[in-house]
Image 1 (cartoon, rainbow, N blue to C red):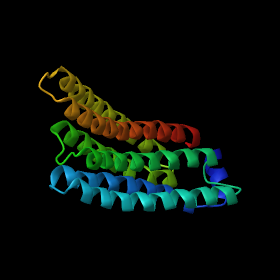
Image 2: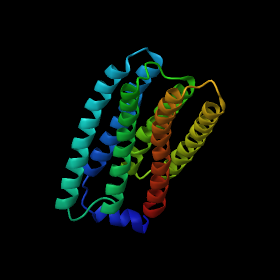
Image 3: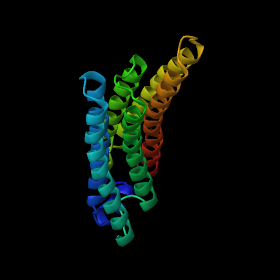
Length: 213
């Protein structure tokens, strides 16, 4: 038995902190999945916004519960700063997903463009990986965490290529109306930012694996 295992044996098991994080990861994936209904199933932007907004409110409640628990608990299963950071990053993914669909509603994007669809698909894939990864913290499966973090980084790089190519084509096409350019650029940026946040979570998961493994 290693020193880390000895410490874990004697440390109080505040398992509910893992519950919070796992709920947040699941909400992030639910939000992205709801966004994909707008992309693939012909759902209106407004209907998708309403659904995602509900999930975001649930996510906000979990963040509040996490912060209250951190303030009241002396010993946490991993460093409280790490718990708070991961919680905040997971919440940001959901916030950015909500921001993307709100931008669609506000700017009148009735149907996503092909680059938007590709970014939404990549966001769904990223959040699914996050949903798989976070429960591994509870199980101390740190090698698996590192492996999933690598997959998240690959997906983020794919999204970056899609985003840069789409923006380049928008600005180089003289037939694109200025309003269309601004509208599509704004939504593409919101989607790319959401995927980019998943890359930040990949870094956090890797750091947690190294720190606690």
